[in-house]
Amino acid sequence: MITFDGVSKRFPDGSLAVDDFSLTIPSRTTTVLVGSSGSGKTTLLRMINRMVDPTSGRILIDDEDVAGLDPVKLRRRIGYVMQNSGLLPHRTVIDNVATVPILEGVKKSEAHARALELLDTVGLDRGLAKRYPAQLSGGQQQRVGVARGLAVDPNILLMDEPFGAVDPLVRDELQQELLRIQRDLSKTVVFVTHDIDEAFLLGDQVVILRTGGVIAQAGTPAEILANPIDEFVASFVGADRGKRSLHVDPAHTSGERGERVLVDGGGRAVGILRDEAPAPRSPGAVAP
Ligand SMILES: Nc1ncnc2c1ncn2[C@@H]1O[C@H](COP(=O)(O)OP(=O)(O)OP(=O)(O)O)[C@@H](O)[C@H]1O
Image (tube, rainbow, N blue to C red; front, top):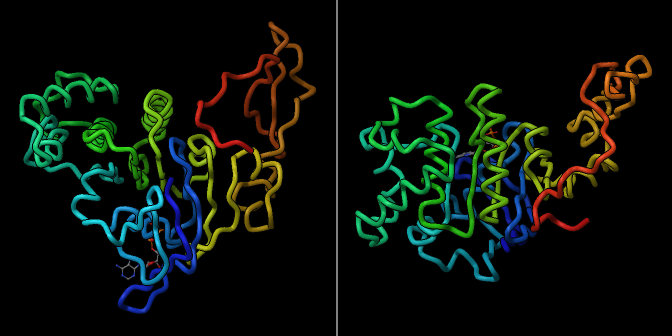
């Protein structure tokens, strides 16, 4: 469990990025911090692994204040994945994935064997292991970034807009891959995005932020959709534009297999209504 307890961050130039932020992030679930640019998402994420230190307040990991932990050791036991993969350009894929475990004292042969397994985990062909980052597509680079984040088998995985720079199709694939990985590994994932659809897809808990890291609303996607707390949230999730209010389109209720087409408030077709319930999300999903 990660706890933010009255955390503020003022940078030396005077800008107040985060103002008195408190939140509990349950273990083995995905919490998504979502908000527009400058709302303090990255600052919040980086305070967990002490890339940024708060000006006041405390951040606890399993009741232990991170302020008392060595920042380098802390960073090595927490996975971190960022937007532009952050791979070392002059190291091969396998070396990129194995770097931190080797720094931690794992034998090179063992670290490489584990790195190959991690390529499988993130859906990458082992044949790419000897390539350099520049010889990979953007989506492949992000997969390597995720593999590297998982390399020390961390309990916590921090992800800062990891799929923000890839095209929508690849982004869909990476999102599905992350859901699958999370079903298998159940890490405590803290994911930053400005995309509310991505937040609702991936988050067990979704935290909508205003400027200054102020929580507009936190809850499960269902809770937020069913009851946006104010106009800001309604607008942010698209509820005010009818995007989230779905109706069966009376003009399309008798497809070949009796499909009923769902349309949003603007009359745009968005999906098909089925009678069977979807599979449960994940065992660690936050209870309502
Ligand atoms: N090193 C810094 N020095 C001064 N101000 C900073 C620094 N880093 C961030 N800020 C400011 O703090 C605020 C929050 O920034 P942060 O990067 O956390 O927001 P964000 O929500 O992640 O934004 P984005 O989606 O654009 O990455 C912004 O006003 C930003 O200008």
